[in-house]
Amino acid sequence: MNIQELYRVYLENPNITTDSRNCPEHSIFFGIKGEHFDGTLFGDKAIENGATMAVTENSPQRLQQLAAHHIAELKKNGLKVIGITGTNGKTTTKELVSAVLKKKYNVLYTQGNFNNHLGVPLTILRLRPEHEIAVIEMGANHRGEIRDLVNISQPEYGLITSVGRAHLEGFGSFEGVIKTKCELYDYLREHGGKVFLNADNEHLVPMAKGMDTVPYITGGVKECNPYMKFSFKGEGNGVDVVCQSQLIGDYNIVNVLAATTVGRYFGVSDGDIADALADYSPTNNRSQLVKTARNTLIVDAYNANPTSMSAALDNFRNISSDLPKMVILGGMGELGETSQQEHDGIRAKIKETGVKDVWLVGKQWGEYDFETVDDVIAHLNDNPIEGKLILIKGSNSQKLFKLPEML
Image 1 (cartoon, rainbow, N blue to C red):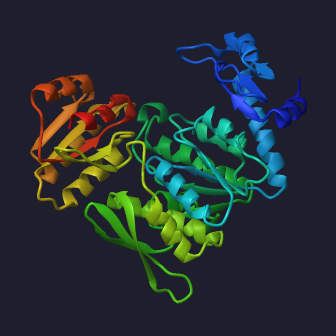
Image 2 (image 1 turned 30 degrees about the vertical axis):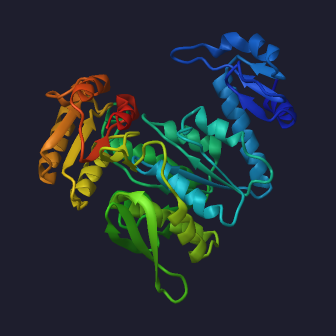
Image 3 (image 1 turned 45 degrees about the vertical axis):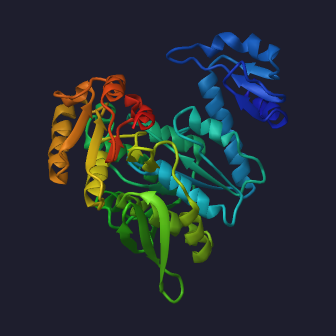
C-alpha cells in the first residue's frame, strides 16, 4: 500500500494508536517495536479490539511518512507550523506560545514530551482541518534527529530556546549540540522560513545570520519571590505591560518573551498575551511550587543538565525566605566523559548559594549521599524534615518526583 492509499484510509479512520489494547472506532494501529515490547506482534489483537487497519511492517517509517503527507496537505489549506527546540525551556515555551496563540486561533500543540521520532508524527496526526496553527516541540539526544523531525513537521516558523551542555554523550561535544539544534535553522533557511530570535543569546545570533528573523520583544524580570513578575515593551505607545506569572525562576523570562513575540507577530493583543501568561500554571514537575503540611518545595524533577541545574541554583539563591533552605539534587545523565567535570562544576555552584543542607542522589556525583530515590525515601521515613524551603532538581529518570509526598 503506497502512502496515498494509506492516507485515504487515514482520512476515514483518523484515530491513531500504538496500543493494541486501546483501539477506538475508526482507528489505525501502528505496531512499534520498543526496548521492552514488540508491538509488531499484536496486529491481529488490534483488529480484534476494533482497529480498522494494523500496520506492523516498517511501522515507524510508515507513521512518519503518513504524518509528513498529512501536514503537507493541511498546509495547502493555510495551516501554519511553528517548530520549537532547545536544550532548556522548550516544553515550557511550547506551552506558553500555545496558551498565547489560543487567545485568537484554533491551536494544536505537542502534549507532554511527545517530541521524538514517534511523538512528533503522533502529534501531527491529531491535526484536523479546523486547526489554524500547529506548535510542534522537537527534542534530540543525537546528531541528525532535529533534521529528521523538521522534515516530518515542515515548519515555516522556528524557535530555538537555548543551547546548553546536555546529552553530550550523544552529541559528542557542545559544538555538536549547537549543530544539532541548528538543523531547525538549516531547514528554515532552505525553505524561506522565519526565526523568532533571542538577540541576546551569543550562540543563537550567529546561527541565524542572514535569516529572516523576528527579534524577541524587550522585557525584564521585576521580581521573583518565588513567582516571577515581569514586564514587556507594549505595542504602539511603548508603555511597559506588567504581568504576574505563576512561573518560578527568573530564567523563565526568555520563555515568556518568546511567547510574547510569537503572539504579537500573529496579531494577539498585548492584553490577551498578558492574560494568557498570567493564567498559565506549570505542571509535570517543572518548577512547581508545592506547599505541604511540613515544608515548601520547589519541584523541578522532570529534566536536568548542567545548564538548567546551574540556573535553578542561581534562582534558588536569590529567593528570600524566612525558612531555612535545603537542596536535593539528582545526578545528571548522558554527559559522557565530561560527567565528573560537570558534576564537580555543580558542586562548586552549590557552595556559591550558601546552602549547607544538601543531599546528592545518584552515583554520577562520585561522592553522594544516597544512591537512589528509594534510599532517600527510606531515610525520610525515619528522619522526617519540617519547616524548610527545599529545591528538588533532577531528571525524570532519577524519580525525585516521588519525594514531595514524603516531605
